[in-house]
Length: 93
Image (cartoon, rainbow, N blue to C red; front, top):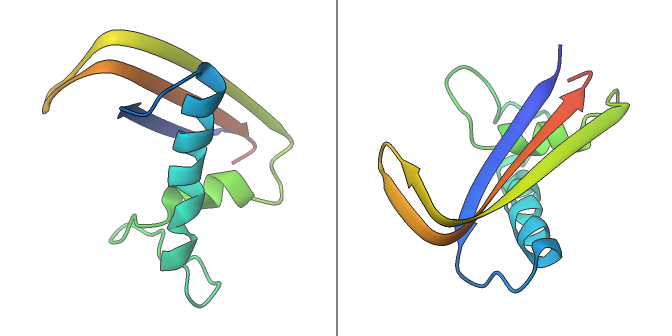
């Protein structure tokens, strides 16, 4: 079984490396919600730090990521122009 993180962003994307860095920073910035170090901020009722848990999980031995740069990226809730879409899988989660 593997874990997954997904991020999309537009604006301020000067390169692929910059886009990846900005989106990984989004995930790691969730540490502010893990105030007691227990990761209780990632549960069925609270998802505020679930991306962070994937990034820092000690048992993870493999990470694979893919980045797509999109002139137009459409979601059910709207769209973004000149966007980046990043997906990372973690094994084991």
